[in-house]
Image (tube, rainbow, N blue to C red; front, side):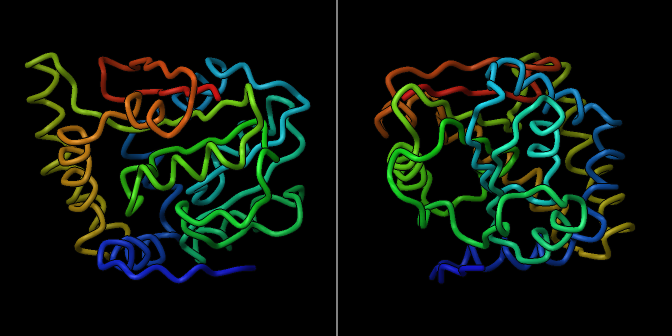
Length: 233
């Protein structure tokens, strides 16, 4: 397992948070989304139309739910990568089919040869990258021509009523439940703050194109609470 040192206050704090909540991460994901997170992952992979011969790198894989869904859909060559060692350990406990070992790394420094993967997936992890343009350039480097990057990420809904309800849930209910279960006071405060900041400042479609992808398209799910962005090299 290779560790890439990253000198960033944000990255250090993100790693601390996710190492801290790894044990309760799956339970809270399913609870706080009322189980809709299963649908989001499945829908994202359906939109990607990933073939059974795909060679998949799941970046910011966490405890592996995106990769596990890809496995259910027939993909057999899967690599997992995450900056949190605790998350990877939980992933390893859930799978005995992962190729080699899951790798602990930062998305901005991928220790893989060029044009190796046919697909890269990231579920709810891009907003935690410390340098998104740099990470996307790495994605373009290691993915084959015609390959796809599929990003599943939260966003702020545009409907005013949905936005009010969303903000109330994210700012008050979600942090309270998260603190009670995970025992980490900052983890589930960071989530709504990071989503709002990310949505204001980051255009994933634009950044993928600037990184060298020929095309990129956005698909909104569940009243615009979640976006699936697919880039094609």
